[in-house]
Length: 369
Image (cartoon, rainbow, N blue to C red):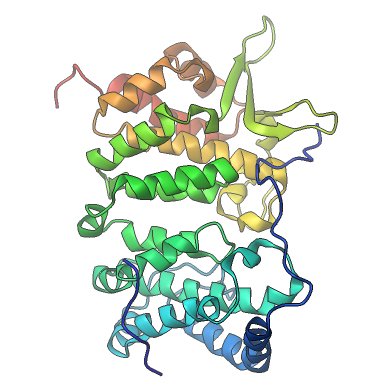
């Protein structure tokens, strides 16, 4: 197969999603879209088995699930994928259905007619994620198709983790990021408070342990300054005689009666092991589609806390100024000390706030290095 040339350079009941109307798919699909689905069904088993094998062999790990396996990359496999020109072929296949009558917006409809197609495209993106992991040469090649990957964000195709892997730790590609990419993810957060979008922003504002000041500034401007309503609201209750209670609200989350859904961080302080991890750690590493609404919101809160520490790395004055002025984030020195001392709050949460204490009050101007 040869591809054409690369194109495009309480009880939580209401999730934090603000789509006005679900996508409607015609009861009778156009003839060309029906043909795509017929061909997909005819080849599905063989293609799925092949992609599963490729994805599993792309990393070293004991996990046998291709969608969660994420061990060290197989350098030989990455080299073979590059030399056999698999990257342009895969990206040609990823966009092919949408040039043959299937509309990309249908992927979020939940229509079972597209389940097989979605699974194939998701596995293709998973293969590309592993192909570029810690491999700048492959990442540069895949970056040629970045406009296609950007167009598939928020469509349930696993494109976000692939885009994240292209940039993460690769300074040459990080330097190519422009504000429009950050605005894309802010827009996605406006549609849904998905922690994976925050994961992407976290991954691009630093390169290893070094800050990327230009990208930090973009995130501060586009998210913190222009869209602060997307951030969690954090409150610390210091009632006399009772331990401090850390409450969290993700704007848009509601109880059954329509009231705001506040979470107590202590509810996630469960040492019972889930897949070898405590509850909070499990929530951060599990497949996000398998989490409850409350667990997704806790993960979103934790990721935003991580992002706050990342954007202030390197004594970034714009980030420091916003984080210290925003009273909804509960980042005052006294509040941080109280959170760090309170054992009812999950250890993982306190670890994140320890990093914030260092960024906001220790490693900052006017101190000198």
